[in-house]
Image 1 (cartoon, rainbow, N blue to C red):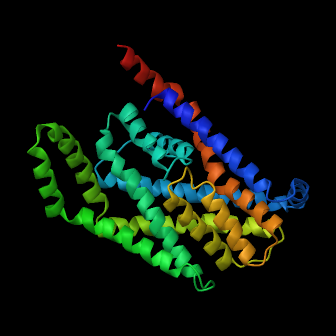
Image 2: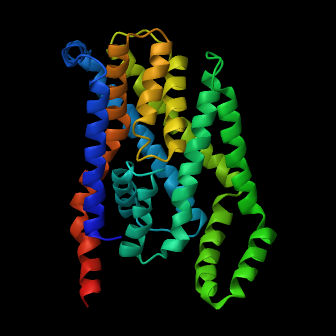
Image 3: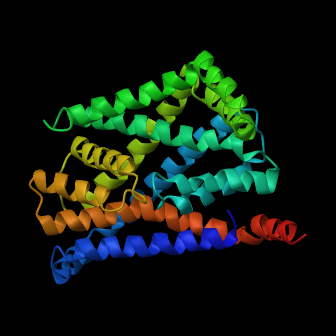
Length: 320
């Protein structure tokens, strides 16, 4: 991963986002959308972005908990800058681009990537668990989606139990070491596994999932106030379900940022609630901007501010 790769991914992200918005815009009349947006109650905007930003800060707290769990302590300022920069890569399949944070930790703090990569995985795992909890609360209002949540939960819990089965995992590493070609890979995987095993212990996962649940609930509230700003009278429960369920669908699709799947799910669920399709699209566009794109823009800004400090040194090393 280098500076050119990062810039390339950012441009692709922006292009994909723009194409998605254009595609959904074609589903309705642009003039109707414009009229809906001009009637939006803009006094809700500070509250919407404040709730989203507070959610980001809570997820930063979770990031710090995970780092300290594996014995990594760096300055709060640098840790926050690295965490926020990672949000610039939210528009990558399964948010895999957020492994940028591991790269930045290596570049600025000389921490082994294999040691910190499980932190990013644990973040995504606890985010999904939190979304399932929130969607399960909302399922009391909707009749569909129950089995989808149950199956997703079982897969995630099984993954945690597999990582905790140290005897099984170590026996696999022993087999790998018998082959000279696999011995180096096995060594790297052992470093990765040691961090994973610590991060996915029950107490740590429970604590991190609680933080994630509150964090994502704040983003659900942000979406709720988007609906209020558009003069839609859906309940908080309905807003929570629409936002969390569509976010799970987008995450499991493994598409960049869940683009297309998340938007279609949000729009479809809102239409199912009786919302006019033009207002549903307007709410989806504003909701995604206030949560996903706000984070991408904020992360990109912080990344660009620190670009030379993090990447120029790395480039110098490669030249030498």
